[in-house]
Length: 130
Image (cartoon, helix red, strand yellow):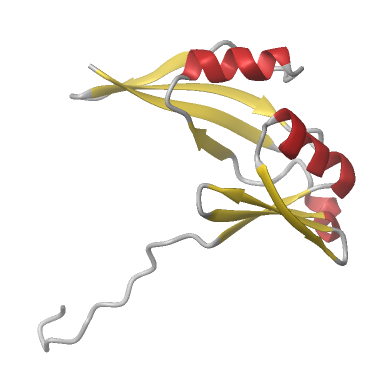
């Protein structure tokens, strides 16, 4: 509430994230079969949708010219070593082994980066309690 008792407006929940791709069928196969994400549906013209923990992820074929230039997408995982090993076994090429990013007072932040077939940057992240 502000000083006059009115509710403060502020954005706080992401509903959908778009990732540009050059081949939506190839991208759907990667996100569904390799990353194991839950596929929701396809829609014209060249869109694919997934559930990402309650946030919808849209693979955007019409934005193909922007593929590989999207912001990084970070997937929070409970065990980075297990997630890394699973995706390695599925053919994902990581840019480096999982590594420590930062030490916080109560946890460490670890990450491992990889790319989708359109060179969009993706990452696994894990907060390890101390």
